[in-house]
Length: 117
Image (cartoon, rainbow, N blue to C red):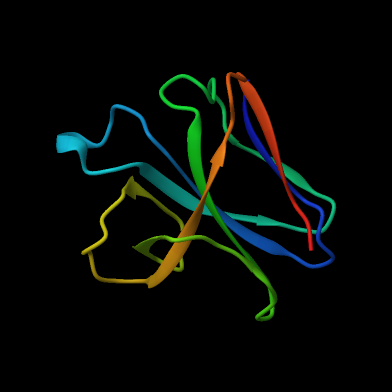
């Protein structure tokens, strides 16, 4: 079970995810974590539980190495450049603002997200 992200792009990709669960107090938003560094053709299991356990809606942001393309969206928060695991905090300082993209995992327990160019 879980969320797998696959890099179908021609260069290394750095990926962060977000999801709703019951760990963020006072409804502060989704739980976010990253970064996974995926070489071309590689996949990583980034969440090892049922993806539909709390919500079918997830977030991700992906950045290709060497100032390549960005897979982003309109849900912006500050994200550090190093590994992190925390609740969404739009007003926290540190890192850089990054826009997460929303995606729907449906009723699936497993889901694979493919990043393509």
